[in-house]
Image 1: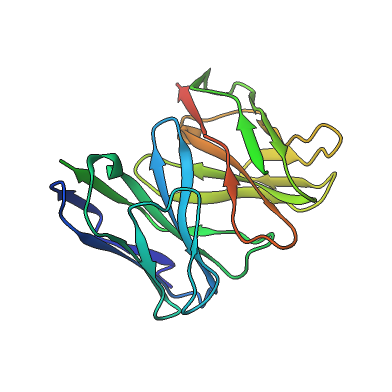
Image 2: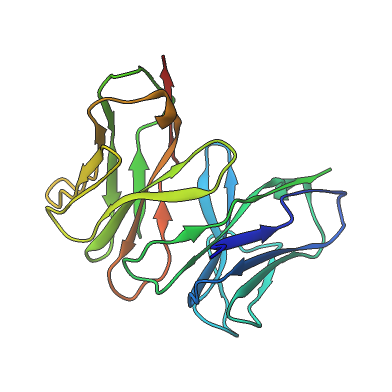
Length: 113
Length: 113
């Protein structure tokens, strides 16, 4: 099992460009999450999904969109990147929400110039 | 709302020293509590967890006890190693009706030989 994988690992964008980050999991998990990690801020939830075809906003959703067309994939989109979106992005998944371990991907380091 | 407060780092120790990282929480209901560890350049991994009051989670020599009366879940290790150098995150999720983790801001641990 690969667990949770993220593509790409690194990316540099110019302000205004768009991109999509891909998260894939092979554990048949229902719940998937996108976080961003910034120095001194810990992890902040961007969006999450409790099942195929469903998404919900987290703590910091502005400027991001997500889609969960297939159970194993969770896409995070930036339509018009801004320097404030420079961060490390982590995807996670879990079998169900309450009390269960979340499994994290290795992260995507995004720089917006 | 839910919140997690961790001691600020970095915590700097010599090898074989005793480690304590404090974590206190505020939560709706009775949460499950977690410690995650992030090694340099990697995603988060679950270190240990406790799902009810007085439970003790343990793994790799680390321990934490769920103290409902003090709303705390302090991380301890009797003898740290250089390889324990990492960022440690305390987190919670209520046991019903919720599907998202609330993280503390993380505490960096640096262990020198």
